Image (cartoon, rainbow, N blue to C red):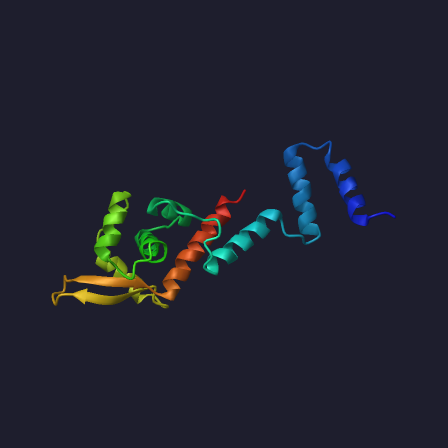
Length: 170
């Protein structure tokens, strides 16, 4: 009894055998498009993005904040601040963090912010709000403030990690 799936694999092997690597890739890409089959890379990217978006760390482990920043591939000061805040809150389990904590960490990585308060205020002003202030020590305008990422802020970083994972799959 013939197995149509095995027959197709044998025919494909015979057809691709004499081709070089890039030619094989073009033929397989054409076949995947023609028969509406998602590529293995796309399937892995979607699966990884779903795991990260659902809050699963999966096989992602970050030894330090630099590993997390590298994985998230932030662009600009506000995204860098979000990722470092995620490190403190979600990876380290801190209940809150200060702007000074964020900027000191970013400075140590060569990514210091010109004005961390302005950056955090811009994240607070976004809709939906990505950061919220949860405390303030003292009465002065310069008093040390305590912040937390909102659910939307955590989701934003997880989406950045998912996009970073997309680029990492080969």
